[in-house]
Length: 433
Image 1: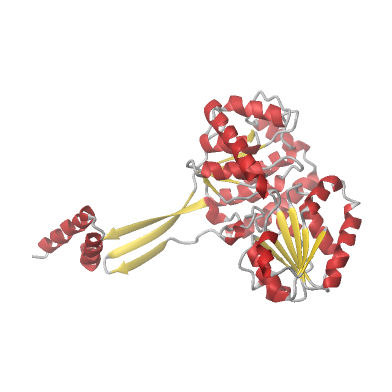
Image 2 (image 1 turned 135 degrees about the vertical axis):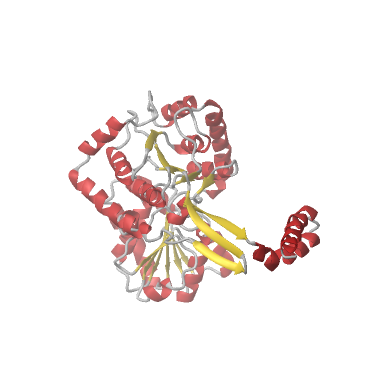
């Protein structure tokens, strides 16, 4: 693993680049072809892609109620209990985010303005397959959608080669309140939810993480009329540590990120040279015990240890990188956490591994990646809601702001805008004569 010591500030920007970003043009072209195919051929295209990518020959894209009931009975009791416990914490945290009352403000005499939060009506959720059955992502997406009040919640996830969906995903979907589950994944699933097919419903907004192809598909459909939660691609973690940190804890945090996939990235920032030089050996020792060590080695090949001069530089670099996950395993963890301006989710202190947030602390693990945390939040209740404003003017309101509107409209050369107000001013004046 590469150790970069005291990089010049001019070199910081290149060090924030994510893995495989240079292949984005190739990915974009492939995804565009998939979207066009699904848009024009619907279910036939989805079945062909599933056969090509997963080997599944599907008779039906829709998972039946009978399959969901069977999944509940075949999921181990201990796993169901863990899912239920995690779901309870996720519900508690996200329910607290829901707007409690409508905003009402009288901005001028006779001018009442309101803002009302309304749920997205049709939410489309994407749950990746591939290396792991991410039933935790089902909870992270579907529970906020239900709490927000979405009228219809559908979920797409890749099937196994035999066409089945992992029982734990189906159990989590039922527990979280999903209305329909479809066995399709990748860019083709995003296209299906964006435009609808004979089976898959069209979503108003699409949520969920995925690989480079899924992320690219989300960004492309967002330009074609379907809203998305955020760009959420290959996962990443940044760890800030000092000499007080437990090296095994830090190494395990590196590896937990690496097992997401070969595109994932782990970064250590430290001002302790001895800690920086000792960590690779600890990582290698733990890696040898991991069942997915070959794949994880690919992720670690573009992970980095960066040695900086002091905590001020560390926080400046961290905010420039804008990590999806930020673990602060440092003697001044709380103080450094207060300086965070760009991150998806922050884990404070030695006892706060990223895996806690991935599963059961209650926060959401669907987070912005690739530096998008500079501008995006992770999934929360607001992501499933839109805010509609209302205004109501009385004759008093016309007298309060009418002339202001006339002057501004006139100076923007918008005569009809001015006329709409002028006619009302005249009508109000006539009433008072």
